[in-house]
Length: 175
Image (tube, rainbow, N blue to C red; front, side, top):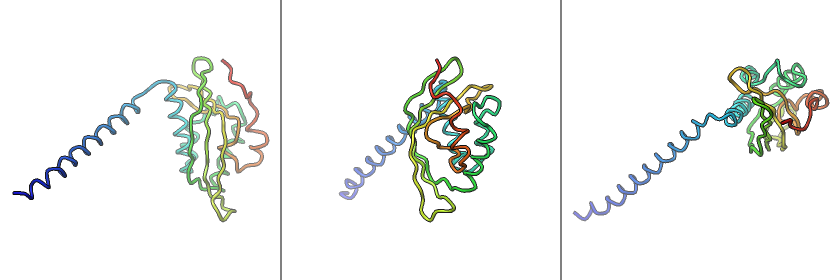
C-alpha cells in the first residue's frame, strides 16, 4: 500500500509538465496567425534566408521581384549563384531592428545579422557580421525583395556585385 504513495507525485508531475507543453504550442499558433503587412514582410525575409541557406536559387528568386528590382538584377542573380558555388551557408542569425513603411505597399526592413559559412577555398568556417536594409514591395499578393543596402549578406562571393550592384540605390527610406 505504501508503494502507491510514492507513485502519485510522479504522475502529478507528469500531468503538470504535459499541460505546460500544451500552452507553448498554443502560443506558437497565435504568432503564426498574425497576417499584418509587417509580419508578411518578415515572413518573406525568412523565406529568402531559408532558400539562401538551402542553396535553392529558384526558391530564393521566387522572393525577389525581377521587374521592380532597383539594382542590377542580372548581376545579383550571378552573385547569388556564385555564393552557392563557393560557399556552404552553415547558419545565419538575425535580429529585426526596425521596419519603416514607405507608401502603401513598400517597407524598409533593417536587419542585424551574423552569417557562418564554409568557403571552398578556406579550411575553417568563416563568420561575417553586419547590418543591412532590405526593401520589400507588395507584388500581386506577396512581398518581394526589390533592393538592399548596407553590409552585403547575399551575393558577397562576387566582387563586381560588392563594388557596383549593391550600392545603386538611395540609402534613405522615402515616406
